[in-house]
Image (cartoon, rainbow, N blue to C red):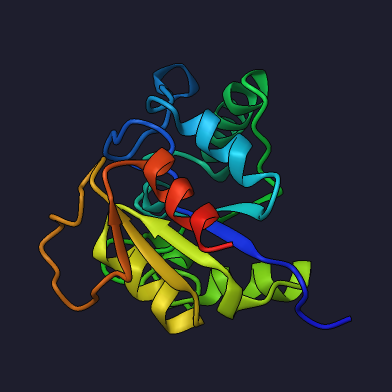
Amino acid sequence: MGNTKKAAFLDRDGVIIEEIKFITEPDKVKLLDNAAKAISRLNKEYKVFIITNQPAVGRGMCTEEQAKKVNDKVLELLNEQGARIDATYMCFHHPIHGIGNYKVECDCRKPKPGMILKAAEEHDINLKQSFTIGDKTGDIKSGFLAGTKTILVQTGYGGDDGFKDATPDYIAKDLYEAAEIMLKEE
């Protein structure tokens, strides 16, 4: 059919769950207030994807399997509250602090748009009708480079990540308010 679906590309840490630098243990996962409610509302109109850099793997702080277990816990907590994630895309690389095969300048690590573009290709997504939501400038830049609209949430880093090279289309106090913005655009 060719790019017929809309998507919400969500950063995970600081947007869906509480920001913990280099989270490596599933029992530390805590959903942010109303995150599941926001995703549940988005599920009615959008495909919802997690797009997340997880450099703790590349830095040797945990394995890919441990990182996936943390994400599985996120999905479990969301499912318990009626929210669905259609797929998760994770980048484990770090171009400077990575170890071994993980020390690479890849196309998937945000702010590059590789994960969003892969999700769009694999799930028939119309990027112009889609949104990228994040708490860091890199999330916003990634969405911009992929051709989506962007929303910076004020949870997590709230854009205060030391970079100023991307301007969001919208600013929201949290994921729930971001979902409201998206649904009003319908």
